[in-house]
Length: 429
Image 1 (cartoon, helix red, strand yellow):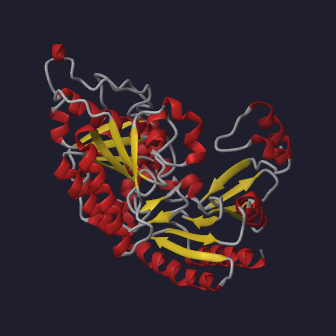
Image 2: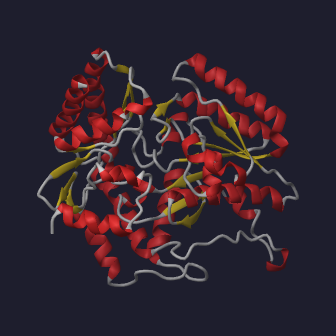
């Protein structure tokens, strides 16, 4: 088998996500034969550093021996069972641990990030419905992204994704994201949010936010103080606060969850991606006993939350998630990452001297270099992607923003190689 063989068979039948398939008339698709640690290997013997953690999901490397072992053990006893009227040990243990980590009390399971957002939106709306109130609006930040199912797409603000389907969207309102991390930008954005809440609070069920980093929004970053003030406004106006931690959770920003840096406690937390270490689809919406009690009643009151997925609470996925949490505990991951975060910060300084660099941003293990002087039509991000692949690194720039968020098992030497290679490519453009 060669790359070419598998590519031809793939393109005959498969429609890839987030891709203009016509591009593959000129740009080869890369079939991956195997992976280990932070590296991907194709059928022609080439090796690529997975510098974006396979779309931000992989935390501890591919084919991690400990996670592999725990999944194999689970496979010998239970692979899956309907999660209505049944339960199993892995999901009970996982729920206990997630509640302890977040300080919230109840877990509702789905199987991907967009589905988790749908659950949080529906649940927050339904909560008020059970109180006899109809509050059809949701508020999100400009430049935000929360997934691609219809509800999740509606609360996002990425025009490229959203405009096509605007006629069938739920009702949403956008409020400005802080322009940067400054106190002035934060206060300006909070004033806008307060004005919006004052006008529409009796129609708003929830405010949803990606804490600290808008990942699909070109890695835009803002101050934790915005989250703190926004949560206070939500409490003042009786609006739920939903933290979409799907991309930024599980250590990406330097703390287990990004919202922790604001010293707040959300009403709903959406978790996925790194939850299983990048192994299997699983998502959780974590919420409070207060929310849970609004749905707890006699059957004939018809207030139950009737939302389900066939693979809800999959035992293998839960085993992977428990193994992931084991590694966090046993290996003191967050403490070790602090050294790598500081190393990245130091190495990023040299990018500021490049004339084609507009801004350098970092939050925890997420680093972004925004370029200037290129028209969007030039597709400079694609050029950089192809040059990096030739040098053994897989990155996938967002327009004119080059970023990386590698698995936590990356070594300092590998980080140095990654950053130096990106620097050299940008210098040569």
